[in-house]
Image 1 (cartoon, helix red, strand yellow):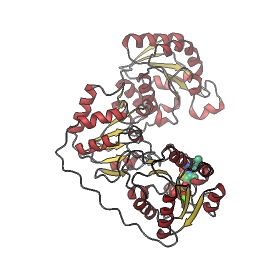
Image 2 (cartoon, rainbow, N blue to C red):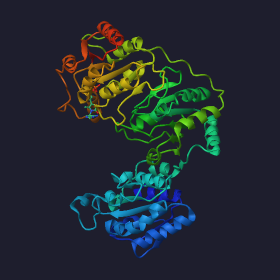
Image 3 (tube, rainbow, N blue to C red):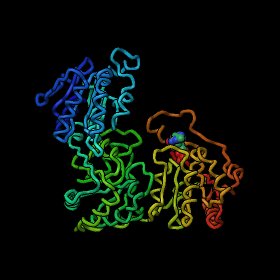
Image 4 (spheres, protein in one colour):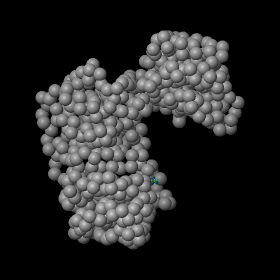
Amino acid sequence: MATTSEATYALLRAHGLTTIFGNPGSNELPFLSGMPADFRYILGLHEGGVVSMADGYSLVRGEGAFINLHAASGSGNAMGALTNSVYSHSPLIVTAGQQVRSTIGQEVMLANVDAPSLMRPLVKYSAEPTCAEDVPRTMSQAINLATSAPRGPVYVSVPYDDWAKDAAEDSAEELSKRVVHSGTGLSETQLDRLTSLLAEAENPVLILGPAVDAQAGNDDAVTLAEKLQAPVWIAPSPSRCPFPTRHPAFRGVLPAGIADLAAALDGHDLAVVIGAPVFRYHQYVPGRYLPSGTSLVHLTDDPSEASRAPVGEAFVVPVGAALAALAESVPPTQREPLRPLPDFAEPEVHAGGLDPAHLFARIRTQAPDDAIYVNESTSTSDAFWSQMDLSQQGSYFFPASGGLGFGLPAAVGAQLGSADRQVIGLIGDGSANYGITALWTAAQYEIPVVVIILKNGTYGALRGFGRLLKTGETPGLDVPDIDFVHLAEGYGVSAVSVDNADDFDSAFKEALSVRKPRLIEVTTTYTA
Ligand code: TZD
Ligand code: CA
């Protein structure tokens, strides 16, 4: 296991940043004491001069330059000089030593109080790693951002007790391999290289994110998957659906834990992530980010996504256009065609409420093929993806940061904005309360959205987390005795409550035909 110091020096070396411009103090000594022999330290006697020297060095070489300053006072002295570097777009990686983590709050001598805020008006990115093991990744993010268009200075403050601690398991090796390419699109050379990588991979896998759907790339994704006969996953914690869910290549949504995701990619020599962060994990399941033998290529529009990822070679490009270009240029494989997906699993039938998978199966059979689903039912995701047949662009939306209260209002807004497609809100009985007032708007403006409330009486997702975290029974997990029929009627929306498939079928049929807002409260089962 590498220390954060060893991993950081390896990273700096990989970026060619082996010259450190600096003026030191006590907080910086633990970092400087680890400086390897192939690095050189250029001492300046005032921080303004240190920055301008590094800037001159960077300007003539057209490359980044690394600076190490002393705490807030050294950083403050550097700020005047740094204003020049901002406007010359000089990719300066400015770092400063910070007091020991546990003492910053006491404002001991030379603590840099709220270090990221000090520099924030001047730099593209300003951070203090949230913990020691994240120092190398934070440094990688800073370097990648400084050198990505538009280039400019960045700032990282590192508590000095971090340097002797262990870095994250694979960070020394993976971060040093990372390259972030930024441009206005894939160059011809880059396209050729990616095409060969995909064509020559033995067992490639595609991982698609929300930007594919947002940029109307779903058909191109299908073409690419078919040319490669490669499986397709949706990147974890998806807010949109970028691929038809009944296509033979579709494998579902990748698990949102580090080790679980890596296990799902086992056996693939190449993973290509398009239009998603790498990755938006949720539950903390530590482990290596990728199986050994898997390399990762990342296409994204978002320079922050590209720079902050812990693994992979990234290309910051318009992903819709890049995907179209790849779909065109990749030659069809000789691999066997993928087999059609098995039939939908027969849902379980229980007394006392509908199994969520059963409910989704009923919705699938009756809803129009081009229906738009706005989903904010959190414990039922697996059931949803296993039972739905989403084939069209723009068919699925989920709160992109996990902040509840989006679903119900967004369903109303989506129906207002998309008169020719039926919008169906799938809203948990917990989530509904954060956005219930949107029913009033739907009623007043006669917006014909269909809202289905999945009523299991509990915050099911939190119960799931409770099992993962072994927190046992905690307060605040249940939401019994909410009458959504009366709530809806109070806001002027007709509503009905059902607890079995037959009653749901007739309520849903009626709701789809009336062209008025409707709410169906469905008693659903929650199984741990
Ligand atoms: N508050 C806000 C604004 N966003 C959140 N994400 C939460 C609280 C925490 N939270 C979750 O992340 S999931 C969840 C809560 C409260 C339970 C939602 O319950 P539900 O769905 O009834 O909508 P399930 O299927 O029973 O989980
Ligand atoms: Ca619930």
